[in-house]
Image (cartoon, rainbow, N blue to C red; front, side, top):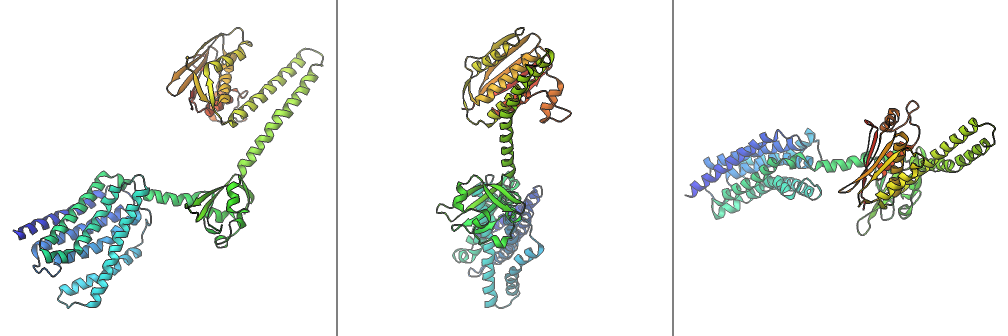
Length: 533
């Protein structure tokens, strides 16, 4: 009865071995990091498992004190397969993705010792203390590969969002469980001959079923954690920011390639040197600075420093410096131009208008005065755009009241235009007030300027805000101005007549809304006003 039960167990072992070989065939359809190594593991280990089952059926040794032949063969195939398993774990987690043949051969080389010992003993040779000792060392080496690879995969389950703990256990169970079962065969046989194949078969079934479950789900293999690790290395290599790691004394212990290529020194000169020597300030000062001037190979540049502490009890810090030289120059340029626009342009226009008023005649003074007024209005629009683009605060705005003010601001200039205004009772939104009012005024003024006889201003409430529609029955906005707006820039051959439409577009973008302009029958401007509580 005991022999029959053992036969059933070894038949199960053969079936599991064949399923592992079949698993390799299924994996051929998966193109992911480490899958080639995992297929090699499945083929080699599966063939070895099937071989142990066959040997267990036909060549069972009844002596309980001697490790059975099938277990010895199982050890050999496990040792051969643990190398591709380890390479799979390295590639799958992004540690080492492109092993050379020399590396693979070097990992396999130590297993020559237990194989030679296996052949020697089964050929009738007497036991060798040296070979046995070396075989034990190699076994520990192989077990280390299996365990270390499993730890890498299980560690990835903690940080990588697409890999669950169950997936990690499924990938690592087979090589670890089986070697533990094989290692216990000698002791188990002393208790009962059936125990060793029973434990071995159970470990195989459990580990292989878990591995099959992971492969069938596919998500764990199609989204390897190597993406996260390789991506982090790519960020460090490809970012233009200067990144330094400093210890508690402010000495540089590591830096990225951008820092080496930007500073007029070498990596060796930076390592173990104070960061202040190259950045002009120590870690504490950098934390409080908005910008810092750094001497680079391209001359002095302005950087925005960010300091991140390492550890709760600070071991050091990560210093990240972003080049903001161009941004600062742009901000300075805009500030100067805005000041010139606000003061100098207005003063010059006042001079032009005052001189035009004392000129003789009617046509030329009026033309000069009107043109000066248009320039003044253009300057006011530019200043207003600058204000709402710079504003970051939000406030509650009654959309109905804002629409009424925008209408009242222009109706006096167009008494012949009929206006209808309709808005919901609950039209209070939290948004950038300056930008919303600028959007309404631009759209309403545009509608009145192109309308033949009527303008409609309406608002509709939706779940997260309001939609504003402003329509007129005129000829529509000229195609040239719309093309300029759509292209996102103005060129010498394609430009609008002012800033009205640009103010509308930028204002809607500032409040986070969507803008559409239809010119089929007249012009209909529609934009959303999201509620930003």
